[in-house]
Length: 366
Length: 249
Ligand SMILES: Nc1ncnc2c1ncn2[C@@H]1O[C@H](COP(=O)(O)OP(=O)(O)OP(=O)(O)O)[C@@H](O)[C@H]1O
Ligand SMILES: [Mg+2]
Image (cartoon, rainbow over all chains, first blue to last red; front, side, top):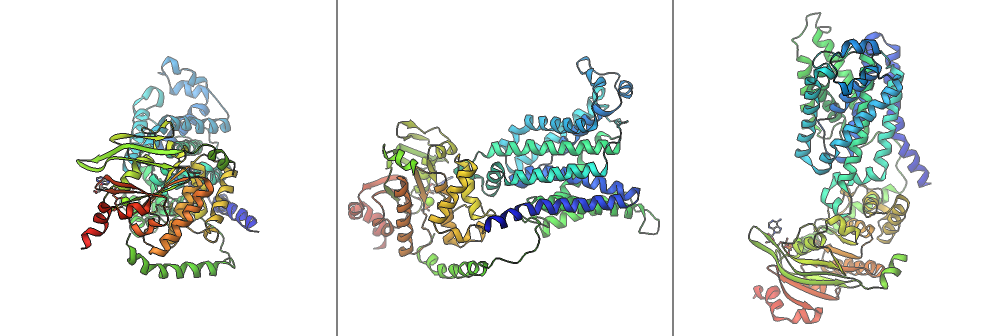
């Protein structure tokens, strides 16, 4: 009986989260063009933040570099889906050893998958860094990764078009495709959390040295979750490119990083539910703020540029001060249910014992 | 059970020879030689700051010795990492518990079983056995950071047992308990260890607690060995009386 309860309990969270994303998709389908656009991009954000949460949620190590994986996914999709004749015109100075890029072409679904794999390859290459570093060092290293990828994309003009936009990507991302990828990502993130590796990584998040003392190969599990999370963020980049049809290298830098950080921190970076809810809530908030800035709520007089970002920053600050672990903390979304019959007994013993132990602490010291 | 049968064929010894560790001039451990044999409980005692935890850190690999060697039977562990030593069956606990706070008791134990190399199914069976054995079943699904101090201690021990130890290094597992409770806890630890034919190094600062519960005692003061031997003999040693009772007069 306990087994049955725990199985439905285990699947409850991903099912509820996918239902939330489905709700967002339905709003998008039912709304006007703007609403559809906001909903689709919100779901793409869900994919990205779910990917980030695979690493940060279980390891407890925040990454400021995951947008680099998104960039790799977006560029890969661009190379594989822009029509070949347009590519020939866009990339006239490709170095010889990359000339095959002009002729490379794939269906969008293949491009989507290859984008994830390309990001995962960057994940494999960079995984030794996160396997070795913790805390502040790790945060700075992930930021360095973002800077490196950004600078390569921005400077290697012959291959990446530098600061000029990538254009002519066919629009292949539909809201339902985005939803399907989001659902798959949520399921994968949940499965990872419940896996052997996920459990050991969460143990190391709670106490690094105690995990080492339990024989847990912390570095190996960090690396594994890092690579999986890179893959999912690569998918997000591919969906993004396939939706917007053109993008610029600046789409994958500090502004995007900041927005995603607000999402995961507001929702709660230790919880998958927090990541998904944060992505949806902040996407909605961003749209409201954009409208506010455009003057839609102030009788048409536009507010100074930057007001929206300022308010977003204020939201982040307020969250960090008032609820450092976000809306969800370490909790996951579950349906409210009645407590088990045995629960009051447990509570009673738990409540009595500390009182009984208190004087003995004084008796023998620690 | 098969493990126990295998191990009992060949009694093992965990040995530190002339081990030392210095912290910028402070000799926390200074030329200590000791050995723990499978099946026995060796009490490591000494006043505050005498180097008990540091000795345990050297044996477990949390700190690298600045001098001396550490062997498990014929294998040199001196350069092995803490993880490698856990795989070899040398498992420690911490003076402050250090349970995985936001995981449940069951997850704490399962994570340790997985860390020591068990596959998922066996890890879960081992977890359930240990939770039963240590009477933690009722709090299996409770988050470790909301437990009472007593159950945090038990969870830390359960976690160590999940790593299938051949040698358990316990740092003041009974800290904060009164004498009767401490003796009771250590007696039950003795039972867990016996059943696994596991050697125990037990750090404790209270002489009266270890008297009846340890097979042998090793006394440290200022990082050096004062005396080692049977509890009854050690207790009568004038140097031990000086350290433990001398300052009171
Ligand atoms: N990491 C460290 N850096 C510097 N000095 C240390 C360090 N660890 C321990 N020491 C010093 O080494 C000496 C021995 O400390 P240790 O913790 O081993 O003693 P202990 O016997 O376990 O004491 P207690 O009963 O208080 O737990 C002390 O003087 C302590 O200050
Ligand atoms: Mg100590």
